[in-house]
Length: 414
Image 1: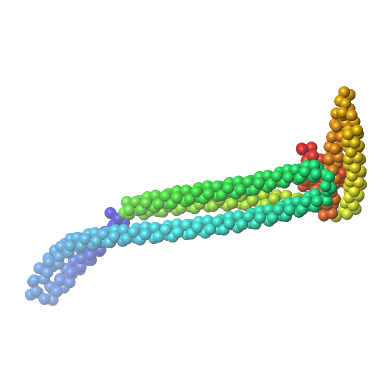
Image 2 (image 1 turned 180 degrees about the horizontal axis):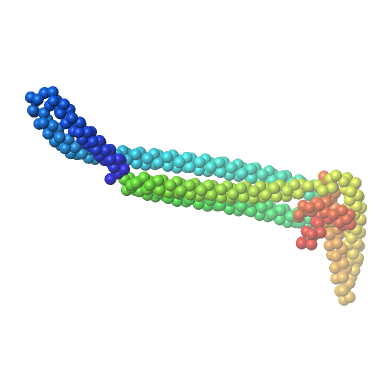
């Protein structure tokens, strides 16, 4: 029996008890009144019959009152149970609606976050592409300027130095091939890096989608379990309902905590990727600045000193070339005067010495070409920068080795 039914039964029993007490009091007072009537009127005798009827009537009405009270208590019990069922249904419906609203809010927040991440990714890719195009344009411009300088130097050479010009062209071609190869390697590295980033982004998106599916599946299973429990325990006691509500709140709190943890981890990963990309971009910009650096542009006196050393070295080298050419011509004249008598091997020795003189003259012409390149770099204040690591070359090395295009560290690695 429910508490409301018990209260109704108690009230009914109290009413019956009060009615009995009132009836007893009325019975106790009636005989006094009849005695007084007997003194005044003696002829009235039917009064005792009314007294017996009054005595028997309360017993019959008490049983009826008890039955009516029991019936009313039963009706009250049924009404209370109906109200309880309706209250439980309304509470379950409200809880379901609140849960659906929370899920919708979480879903919208996830979609907004995904849109922000996609926008940031597109912006980063556009910035990287713009930096890459600018870098390639600068490299192409530098390459064209260098080729123009070399072509101008090539035109200024003497017609008689065809062999030396060919060797210089081969060397320049090898440098161009090496530079093109290096550019291809840089482009390949950038493409590989971009591919790795795209694959990583796809993997993260797949992991995120999988987690969302798992969360949705868990939520759906939890909702089904809650509905089943609500249906089975609709008639349970108030204490059980409070326990279920506390358990549901704990589950929701744990779910929100896990969601916040996932969002925090995603944010940490995104920050790490952004920092790594910023560092790579900074490194590329520093390398580009090194390629176009002019280490001694502010020291015009030192550049003038180096230029004078180069001019003096060029004059000395040109004199050595003229001397070697004259010596080779003399050897050729002497060779024509010789009688082709190979018994002592003098003709063979003369040919070897003449070839050595020509080879030495060719090497000296290459040195003159390098001096011309160094002079052109002094003109634009870029002389003194290493061709490999793009760092500045020491002043002592620039003074005592004329010309020089590599620092000590890069020269040791060649």
